[in-house]
Image 1: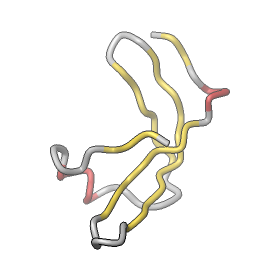
Image 2 (image 1 turned 90 degrees about the horizontal axis):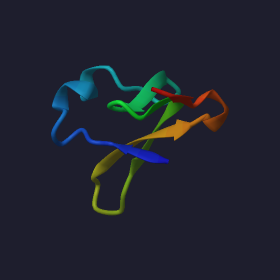
Image 3 (image 1 turned 60 degrees about the vertical axis):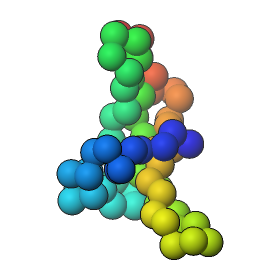
Length: 60
């Protein structure tokens, strides 16, 4: 799973939803399709992740 940083990118909270299909990428390296996953930890903090479908990975 790849962590989606909603602390820095608070605007993501307006669009993220469990099961949403997204494209995760690193600049000038790669991109991969992923499904958004949500968890709440024992302290009540929300964590958002992308679960990559590595078969869709593309080098940039």
